[in-house]
Image (cartoon, rainbow, N blue to C red; front, side):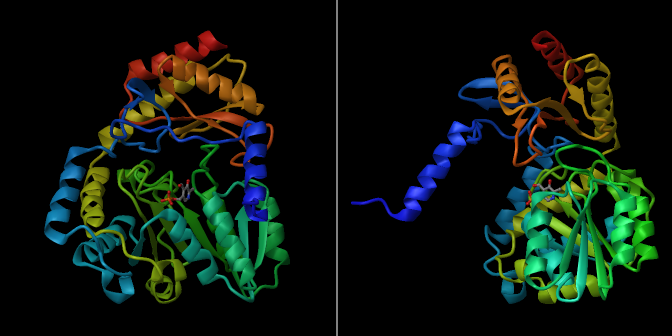
Length: 391
Ligand SMILES: Cc1ncc(COP(=O)(O)O)c(C=O)c1O
């Protein structure tokens, strides 16, 4: 049989990835997500997850999920507007609204789907979207969808408020949306949310904040980045948070004004045309929200481990980016040395992923060290000592 042109192209592109050292491989975990991961029978300290509070394998949450599955079954059976919105989903949405201080919240199966709903649904023809250059891939894809619907899309240099203001001032669009990660997923730095909000007010724009890496971790009671900056639950803000990172389960929410949320519910295609998450996931998340709200000890431990790591990683040949969050990137530069360093750490019992282009810009391949409240002081010390030895 001859190879079809598509097969041929796919094989060539895969070979190209391999030749450039960009092939990605999944490791199979033989243990639950936690401080220690077992892979191929070997135990490594896990600095590779987004489980910032160590809740992914929390037994109270797992129990809530198991009890939820027994009471409500395994599946939701349909998309939410057809018949898949069960009582636990409704309870969770109300709890999230109360927790974040917004009038209403809507839950999604993933953060990717939430972002795909928010941006193109709110910004179509006649609208303009202004987005930070380092926003997460899901927001970039959401911008493409908005663009396909006739929205004007602009990306401003990372956290450059002067550049954003210029774009806003020059825009004649009927409605404007500013979109930013709150904590940037590969750099760990915080967006200047107070300045973004001030610009939104000055130019009558709405502000969409993706708090995937801030929710549960930052602000009083882990309420997230808006709380961290003391910003109000303004009707011009939409807060997106993911529930598979610090919350330890899966899914996402969007919180906002009653009008904005009702509009997303009525018109958001990635909300409407997908099966609702299993109700047991909502049961688990209700428990997780309680643990987040009362999780000051976890957050204090996380902050202590972050501080310990930063104090220990001075004077290395690689640049530690100035991040105060659980995401601590160590810039190596080229791809091969980054991969080699990650491999050497792995051989010494430490799992720290090397992140390469296209996830990050060319020449900035890095180790993305993800700190968790589950880590012990000894874990951090081991990582510091090993990096020093390898330097
Ligand atoms: C900033 C940001 N937004 C959105 C997402 C997507 O969330 P989810 O994994 O729930 O699809 C992620 C990570 O996955 C992220 O880092």
